[in-house]
Image 1 (tube, rainbow, N blue to C red):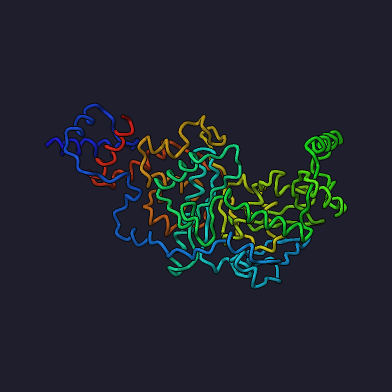
Image 2: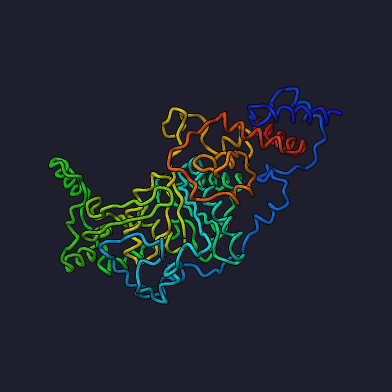
Length: 473
């Protein structure tokens, strides 16, 4: 009798308008403690009882274990990647940016010479392990995951499509293993399982931590130097600061002035032989333009020469910079589409220049608007809970979080606001991502949570309440 009373009380509580996690009254705590509890399942990531969900989550076969790290050193002079002075976006018709694709280049750039719209989607989520997974990052992961899962249903089971998890940990000062573990745990709680990632280091396109791909980045950098598309720069920190001060005093936007751009090769060789520290800079071609057809924002163009100076690819410590790593990884892992936040839009200029110089195909881009707090400012800790782990501790359902995050910048063209996971996979379309910023509404999240709770069996709710009470102890 105690079990049924507790179940009824919990069910009634879960159906309240707030839908906030689970009731925590002493009465219910005692009622739950009084029941005989068998071994229960952990927090479910799939509250949809539809038997088709198992089919929707099928996993494709693992690719072969030949990794880029093994392949790359065996391919001399892999590609003649001459950069055109004007580089229009070519994802409309073909993923290749050069007509000189050789057979040896294909293992390095899987999408070379192919129309990415004909390929099974290979999507990626690339978190930096410098903190917890927050709402914005979770939405980015979700959108990429939905496209990948839908693609796996539309293409053959053994296709190369899938959801890739890549850890961008080149910020050695801030990256920690604890943060990486936290992010992976949050993705697992949300049910955003990956097909390739740091736990599959021998995957075909691994390794999947940037800190483990230094040989790959170094090889590409040396190739660019050999092709005169990059060069060693021996400027000291003091010289660069003086250069910046002079430009600011003259009301000129500060940028590198090209001191070592066309330096005497003999002098460069002497300084390298002497062990002088140097960075590797990208040589921005005269008159270069980068144009993309963004899936969310339409045509976006940059005058590269007027926007950026010769930027760094490798620091003097040998550590590659963010944009170089991202460009190399997206091309060499065969990523077809990159969905990310609009704050990365300006990074696309440098990444596009690098990809074109390497003769590598560009992925399709989709830059989503930011998520704002109710004060219309960028969502941050001052607005309350923003990390996925905090929502988990507060008792929100994973499927409710997935449902609500999907609505922060997307809709299916109807008035429907409640989606099961398999329904989201079927309905999601990049073309329906909106340009305008979305406002995070906690009351709306609570309502979505309550709607998902109403669809659950009493025993399922009891399992979740028990786990919630364990969080509090």
